[in-house]
Image (cartoon, rainbow, N blue to C red; front, side):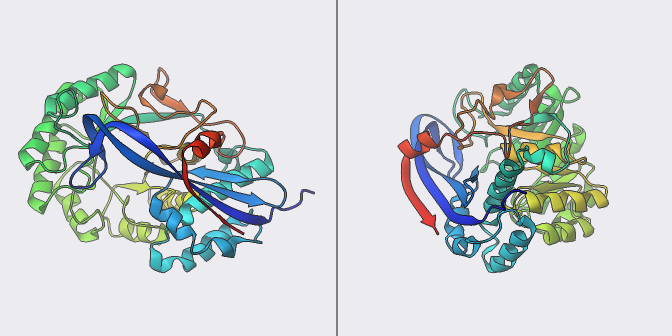
Length: 389
């Protein structure tokens, strides 16, 4: 019988890289297209070390997650790294006043560790069997630069490019500071160009100021049979009442819950009939353990779960869920590379050309998360490191 792995250290690494031809979007700060401009971007990675030499690894999450880990890292020392359910519940309680920050990235690393211990990919530990995951192309937010996503027609052109590349679906992230008529024109331009040829989604990034404008935009989505309408309101995507009212007045399905954390809050939102599709994110929602709980609870309500953004952990989760439609490939742009920051030395990539001829990506087959992170690159660009023992 194998010796059970005991956690001996939690290691957090920060590194910095340059992103070229982007600038911070002025209202929300995420990168948007600006030729010639360069910004610095900090990324983080986590390693959970054990007494038997197996290490759980993860790159992802937000800087706030890694700041929060400092508050509970030492309580993990000496615990059995395979006791993920107990650790999930204990950290959920411990971080209840801090939005449960950091708990998701720790859980993902523990699943990677478990896969290495059992010499199996995570999706097999979850009972999954899917090998091909259909993708949608998910855009950067809009910009004002020629050749970028600066007009409705530019988005429609890019939608056609994605359709020709093999994507079966396309999601619009529009402009953050544009009048509602421009948002509606964007829906109309893309709908006229590729509607009926691919599934279309709209995510205003919580940019719409009023219920009236959100309703107008939803009815524009109705005209072109959009697959879903996501996070319209400046409430930050958390009001059950507002989204239930919107659902009652448009035909396009609503996708919510990217900004509502954890199992119980997801179920409350579902029970309140405030969404049609359920959004989940392992960084935000308690890791792989938390998202699988959300997936199974949503399945009981007959609803589908759509995972937020890319990564090998997302692929393993989606491979293990019956009730999911698309893997979110992005963020994509006609002039820019992908926006994500993990670095790999195994050939894994989430980029425009990562899909096969059927618009799908593969699930990693290696043990754990099935990828090899490039820690040499990280070390060469390292700006900070903390080890808790």
